[in-house]
Image (cartoon, rainbow, N blue to C red; front, side):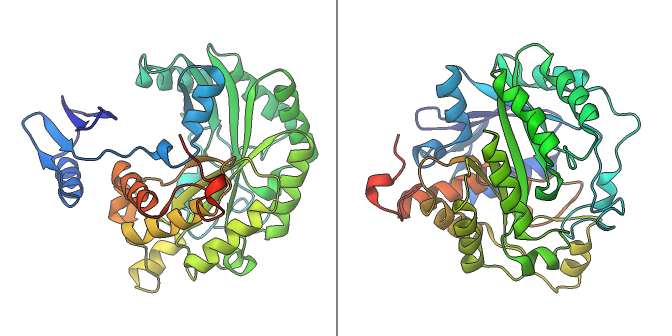
Length: 357
């Protein structure tokens, strides 16, 4: 075991596991060497002094301030499916998705086992957790089945709430009423809606199966039930650049939104989009291009909006492009550099409203 160390004020230490391949270690070294960092005898010393929460109202800080301790999200596969692949809305799914990954495993371990495994992986770093139903469309089931699955998570030790990922067109009032029950019981509850883009043209191009109006309806109804909404936006979708991303941000901010997640477009094996990328019909953003767009979105976002994520990674087994999405920290560092240079969250609105820690 060696360590990836941040040099100034020990911002963070990341263990480099012994089972990582030579290729992965080489990629880590190459990524950081490009940024002027150096490799020493015990790991990679990163000469980087900026932290994301200096510039952005992050989900981690929000949770720590609210619960007075570190709270971690534990990802759960609830064995759901998607109406955009089972024939209800369409087949094949969104063009950026790996369709093969939508098949729920018949050998999947229970929700309780998944949570226990997640806790073990985090060790002693946290004593409270959120159960994150991330895979597939986690509201696409009969309400009583949803209740059973959500309850399996909430009855586990030290689970203080739910994050439920879903599509805007799969949030009927019955589901919102169920989530409202948990809010009333004092649980931390977030409804995470995969919007990706506010452009109906783009939504059609990526075979999303719904229009922006479905998102508007879902957010307004969730807000009426007192449920916090976090919206997922993909930066770099085909036909979209900064102006389209800014349009999407403007549209979502006109609604009662509590949180945002920003993702770079991933080209993954088995997706429809992978074929277009391999045929050189679409391109992906460089890390600096992504950081520039993400930075502008952050600067135009009011400081009370909580950013759950400003970048994302994918496993090397499925990722085709961009290669910089294999690692978490280089892209976050690039976003931080952009924010340090041009201003943090809400800086483009007025200095009065800029997020500061």
